[in-house]
Amino acid sequence: MANLQKQEYVKRLRKADSTLRQAVLKISVDEGASVGDFSFMNNDDFFYSFVNVLNTNKVCYENNQGCFTDKIMIGLNGSQWGNYHNNKNSLITNDGIAYEWRNSINGNICTAKGLSTEDEANCIGRFIVDINGEANPNQFGRDIFFFAVVDKKGIVPAGSGNNSRDCTKSNNGLTCAAKVLQEDKMSY
Image (cartoon, rainbow, N blue to C red):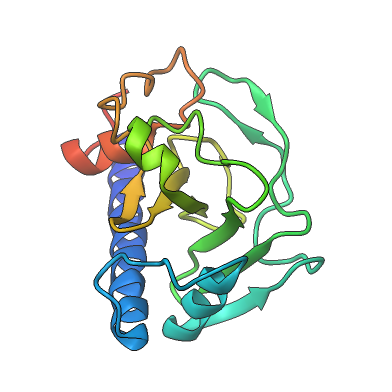
């Protein structure tokens, strides 16, 4: 049963990755920019463009709740984290995957996500993705994953810069997206 659940998580993570990459491509084409060139954007422009290219079930702009879980999230190692639903832009796509967006205007929110130094420096924001919406376990590396949006590059899964070495049961799981996508399984 656990293996079937892990296979479903991997499938849904691949879907989320594909959705993000297709949205980046569409946004770039719509703006007449090269793929991944976001130099024309400021503040939360990326999120508004993202909303416009997706089939959404529900969109929640700042100060609106209901699109991203308000439950406490946990790390792979059992550590408790806060929730990510307050005052942020989020949405739920028709397939039930929730995306929460934060830009890097007020500091680099891409730190500690296992990105290369260059990707971290060029990060315009990040998505936290809950591949099964409100359903449990709400755990990093299981059903919750990070993706950075890097100028001139596009979507970069967390853990891409350090080969996801922190994606183990003894760590928090913040860098697991790249590992799962590369291995096409959850080997932890």
